[in-house]
Image (cartoon, rainbow, N blue to C red; front, side):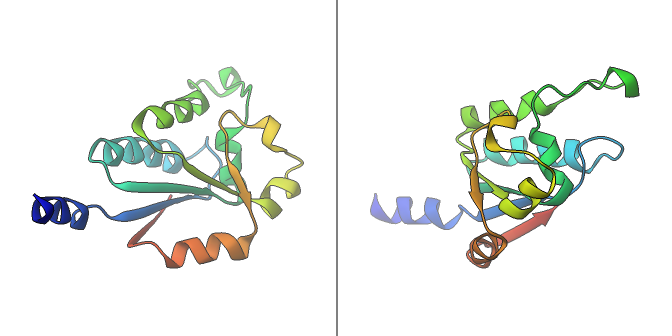
Length: 129
């Protein structure tokens, strides 16, 4: 039984998704979110880092009616149901945009760029969106 468990754990990869783009105007963030949800179904060790304009993907009360698309920020709330709980936000990016954690739709851990960089070094795979 121990060998089978060891084999299962060997198939689990540490995968970090880095979201850097604003949520609307390109497909990067939306497609990234879809990929994250698919990977979560395969029980990988997922984490997400929101850097630069990627932070806007988590902003509460987005009004997308003016650009004729349906908003998807609230979909990030579903990640918890898939055991995707490692959400990191770059502190400088957050402050630079005049936002606080209270402005975001999900709970995140705010980290410095250096701390996020250290986390990146621990990953098996990094996917940029």
